Amino acid sequence: MQTFLFICFGQLISLVGSGLTSFALGVWVYQTTGSVTQFALISLFIHLPNIIISPVVGAIVDRWDRRWAMILSDSVAGIGTLAIWMLLFFDRLEIWHIYVAVGFNSIFNAFQWPAYSATISLLVPKQHLPRANGAVQISRATAKILSPALAGVLVAVIHLEGILIIDFTTFLVALAIMLMVRFPQPEKTNKKSAQWRDLSRDLSQEIVSGWNYITFRPGLRGLLTFFTVVYFTMGILEVLFWPLMLNFSSSQELGMVLSIGGFGWLLGSITMSAWGGPRRKISGIYFFVPFQGLLLCLGVFNSSVTLAGLAVFGFLFAYPIVISCNQTIWQTKVPTDLQGRVFALQQAMEKSASILAYILTGPIVDHIFEPLLLSDGLLAGTIGRAIGTGPGRGSAFFLILMGLINILATFIAYQNRQIRRVEVMVRDPIMSESNSTESISDKTLCESGSKD
Image (tube, rainbow, N blue to C red; front, top):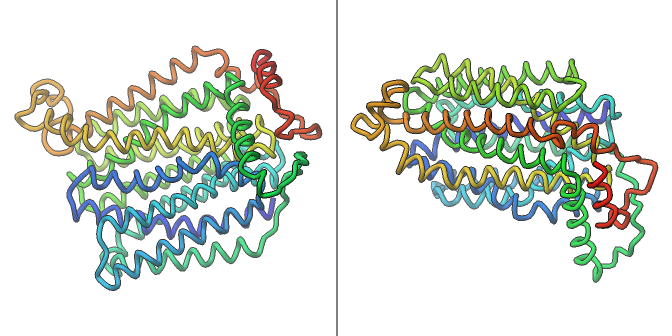
């Protein structure tokens, strides 16, 4: 457990630095271009390469030392930060440079979450997994609080160049911690030859085995589908919230609202870490996802920094509880030597939904929703009477629709017995038995799926 907490601290330091850079780059791009589409493209390049490579990465993580997978991911992130700083220092930085840098980083960042999440299962006893996942969310929440608050001030004092230097320094700290620690690897029950000529075939089989593990378990498959919808709506929120806020607030006020949200995230994470969540983790998901949907509708209802801050606080309070409950279900239902590839596929599906949101949101909002709610727009006399008209109100209306979709998706998922009883109908893996790739044949999986 001490090793896990040490790693968690190192990742916190790195997250703060990355958060500073993300905030500063996001503000720089939007204020330079004034385009939601250009802003959304950053998110697209952050996630698209990650999704493409994730299935292969998952199989590699299950074969490789997971500590070195995390070190590789952190190192490439540091190199990307240094490259952007050099371009900026020599006055050569352009928008497309940022796209290339974050895209390259995205490829190697695909190693980070499957390795980190699968490592938690090895370092932490099963009964403490919800609290460990809560601790992970605490580190992310702390970064969420510190990063925008600091960046909002630092960007005006030391500018983007100084923020990039701070980010690179935090990378060095995180790297040093990862080089110091050691943690166990899952027992390899697959005795196949690891010769290079067999590698491609073996990787293909292992990727398929991870996919089969999900698809032949209706509860996990349904849970993944539900969270794909949730991540789609979150992707739209991620794209629109900053531009929406900047239409009626300053970058300092935006930083303050994001920091308030970070406090909500931190409080939710502490609550989850201390509480451990409900006995049935799916119940926590069913309660807090529609709660987030309701807050999303209320938070953008009018152009109020105060209302937005309160809504973001509540939304992000619920976020770590939802994520921890979901991840605990997966960690307890997937064998440790399959977790790398299963978590990578899980991540790929969820991020694919986010990518779709990033691709669609900019053009839809710029060309459809924003014109509808201008002062002379088609909906100005109807919807506009309730939520207002002018720049940003089309984005607000679109986000209200996404909040309603979250609520509807939860209602539909609750009607599905396989999802509602996933913790009962999908058996925990028996770790003393063989969990090899070969043992998870299609026949076995079909039988397991029918019994589940």
